[in-house]
Image 1 (cartoon, rainbow, N blue to C red):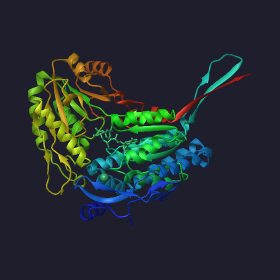
Image 2 (tube, protein in one colour):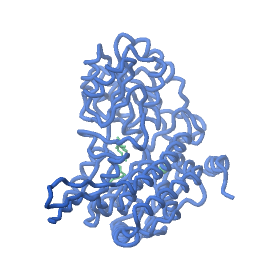
Image 3 (cartoon, protein in one colour):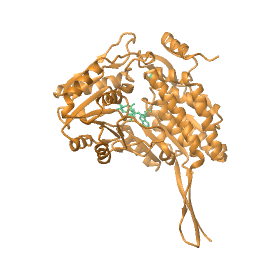
Length: 497
Ligand code: NAI
Ligand code: MG
C-alpha cells in the first residue's frame, strides 16, 4: 500500500525528507549515477536544511543522454504511429494522477511552494500530458495550390532531439509542457531540471517510462547550469532547446546554440503590469492583485509585479490592499500557509538588495520590506509580502525583475496613462487589466506589448492557451498547438505529375 497524503506530509515534516527519492540521472530508461560519481545537495527552502542528494552531471553524462535520445529517435519511437504516441502520453497522464500525492509532496519539499500550489501543478502536468496525447495525431500539414501539373504538400516532422532547460519555480509543470509537446511531435527529449529542484522531473520520467515510453525517449540529466546545462546547450547532437529562466542565462544559451545553429525558444523574465481601473469590481481586483504577486512567493515569470492603479480609487484600494497583505501568514509550504519561502538564500539576498535600494532611492514601503522568520520553519528563507509605491516610472523598482513577493505600485490618471505605464519596461511577457468596461479592457489588450493579456482574471487560461514573451521576455510559444509546432520542422514536398 502506498502511503496516504497525510502520511507523506507527516514523513516530510518529521524526518525532513522522503524515502525512496531517486538519486541518479534518468538515461536510457533507468536511473544511473553520474559518470564521475559526483553528487550534490538539495535543500528544503522551508527549513534551509539539506534533505537529499542527487547526481551532479557533466559533459560525459550529457553525451550519454544525447546518444540515447538520438538512438531512440531513429528506433522504436520513430516507428510508433502518432496514435500510439498519444496513447503512451495518455497513460502517463493517468500515472501522474495516480501518483499525485507523492509528486506534490516531493515538489513542495523541494521547491518550498505551498502544497496546494504543488497539487495544482501536478494536476496541470497531468492535463498537459492528456492534452498533447489528444494532439499527437492531429498535426496536419496543408496541400499547396500549384496548378494542374503538380501536387504539393507540407508535412510536420519532429525536429529531433529536444532539450528542456527547466527553472526551479515551476519544476514539474514546466518540464511537463515541454516534454509532452516534444514527445507528441515525435521528438525525443532530455530535460535538465534546475539544481535547486531536480526531483519531480526525475519522478515524471520514471512514470512516463512505466507508461510505455521507449528507453531513451525521455531522459533527465541533473546538475548545475554551468556543467550539465552548458554541456547540453552546446552539444552538436541537440536539435532544439527550450530554455526558461533568466535573461543573462537566456542570452548565453542563445549564443551557445548559435555555434551549432540549434533552434531555441526562450521564455525569460517579466515585470508584468496589472492595471486596475476605477470602474472595476474592487473585491475581485483585490483578490486578483494578491494572487498575481504572492502566489509562489512572487517567483513567477508572469507574476503581476506592477500594480498600475487609477488615481480616483487609489487611496481606498491601497488601504484595503495593505490591510489584506499585512494579514498574510508565512510558513513552510507543506503546512499550507498563505505565502511560502523563496527558493534559496541567494534569492532571498537578491530580494533584500532590491528592496533596500528602493528604500534608499526614496520609494515608499507601504507593507513588509524585510526578511521574515516565521516560527515552525527553522532557518528557512522567507521575505515579507511587500508593497512599494514607485517614486518614478524609470526607477529600478519598476524596471527590474525581482522574482519575490514584492509589488510595485504606479498611479495613473486614465486608460492612456495605464497603457503607457504598462509598456514602460523592456519586458513584454503578460499584462492584466481589471475593468467592467470591456471596450477599455480590449483597447488595453490591443495596445499593450505582451505575449498574453488577462482580463478580469490574472493567470486565466490553461494548456490550450499559448504562452510566451516578446522583447526581453524572449520568443517562441509553449502550450497549445503552437507549443506542439515548436517541436516540428516543416517539410514541403512537390511532385510534377
Ligand atoms: P537561470 O536562468 O540561471 O537558471 C535557469 C535554468 O538554467 C536552470 O536549470 C539552470 O541550471 C540553467 N542554467 C544556468 N546556466 C546555464 C548555462 N550556462 N547553460 C545552460 N543552462 C544553464 O536562473 P537562476 O540563476 O536560477 O535565477 C536567477 C534569476 O533568474 C532569478 O532571480 C529570476 O529573476 C530569474 N528566473 C526566471 C525564471 C522564469 O521563469 N522566467 C525562472 C527562474 C529564474
Ligand atoms: Mg530544493
